[in-house]
Amino acid sequence: MDLFDALSMIGGLCLFLFGMNLMGQALERRAGSGLRTLLRKLTTSRLKGFLTGLVVTAVIQSSSATTVMVVGFVNSGLMNLKQAINVIMGAKVGTTVTAWILSLGAIDSGNVFVQLLKPSSFTPILALIGIIFYMFCKNDKKKDTGMILLGFATLMFGMEAMSGAVSGLKDVPEFQQLFLLFRNPILGVLAGAVLTAAIQSSSASVGILQALSATGQVTLGAAIPIIMGQNIGTCVTSLLSSVGTNKNAKRAALLQLLFNIIGTLFCLTLFIIADAIFEPMIFNDSANQLNIAICHTLFNVICTLIVLPMSNVLEKLSIKLLPDDKKPEAVVELDERLLATPPIALERCRMLCVDMANCAVEALDKSLEALSNYTPQLAKEVRDLEDKTDHYEDILGSYLVKLSTQASNESDSLEAAGLLKVIGDFERITDHAVNLVESAEELLEKDLAFSVDAKKELSVICAAVREVATMARDAFVNGNLDVADHVEPLEEVVDDLKEALRSRHIQRLQKGQCSISVGFVWADLLTGLERISDHSSNIAVCVLDMSNHNMNQHEAVRLMHKDTEHFNNAYMMYSEKYSL
Image (cartoon, rainbow, N blue to C red):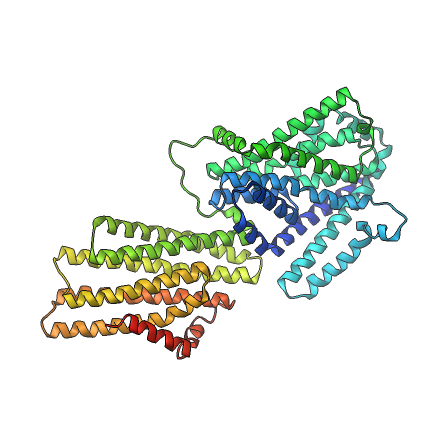
């Protein structure tokens, strides 16, 4: 092997790693909505969690990336530790797909149809299709499909370049001696772990081993321990990603390490015993791309079968090794790591927005209750909920702006823009809820009271506002367009009620039935209630905007629904329901 072969090997390795990274990122973008669907279906079921990890890893071609995602999910509260164990185990089996794809290069037959299965035969065609999709298609999904094909072609060309460059090593005695050295299982495990830790991808390190097998100097006895070590080395990525996370996220990273160490120790023990007692001749046979893929799959499947039933024990062990602090940790609600997978990050943002929506409606309910039955505890609860929604708006606002710049497709970008709009309206609803509580406190402090008629009128508009806010919340949480369509007519009824109640109050003032001091509080209440109704309308219209995939027609949608038969019928229904 001369200098030029060495340069070819380095170039092939670079192409291989770049192609794998390129293909993984494009696959992740292309399967964005699919990843969100899988996450929604994830349960504590071992099988479902295992299959989720397997499928996601098979899609993005990296167990390290999947585990980093899992650490981020646990850190953000999207996933608990029990779920994480099952997903991590599934990821170990899913990562074997890459080795099988690469093993196609070992196909050797005179049959034309069999030869067509070789990557060297179909890769140029895939590269041609990929470049056409990438350069001439404007659709993001087609561009990503083109990127996937180009990534795969680059990966396979790199693999072939590596295999061709190292083929000359078969005549180098030192290379043969090196792999005789790795025949020592402990050294083989260490070599696999160090190589994988360096490039942070077990799939890539298996690919490199498959390329080296082209020399014919790599025996199965040397390859198997290296494969075992590769699974330990891949833990470095998740351990690094857990720095700065909460305890459960650190435990998730530790679980992967424990899983791989236990599985490797078990299989390594079996390997050493079999080698010492039976001295199987197969261990001296030359490894090739196909039997390396088989060994890689068998190792990961055996590890999973051994450790999967012990998942509860592993969970307890990780908690024991990383016990909870005496002082409770601050909850990290949004994790920057999730920005690497925009669809998942968006799902997390939506979950927090749903929590924020529920907080806003709960704050409104409690503030309306305080108007008729004030207690300091109710006032405190409303203010606590307002603080919570303020916090949500702060973290969601900055996070969604970052997410908008990294959104993998137009649909995700539009949803991020929609969430940015609604969080401001939910936060303002809680602000007005606090204003209602302050009005109740002012009445109490100044020993003021509304007349009997005023109380009845107030109960009517309060009921209407409670319903319009609840409808807006439900429309957003459930994506219910029918409910969203009914918000605007009810909002118009609230506007009418406000004007009617203001006129009636003026009449009471003129008759001396009400004081000016009470009138100021009355005006503040009506203004606050009407603004809550306005913000509820904004939320509902935003839901309709998002369903139409257009965030620039807010007022157009609002006006479009007025003066229609549907709008008029709904308006009449709510006018009768909340008549004075």
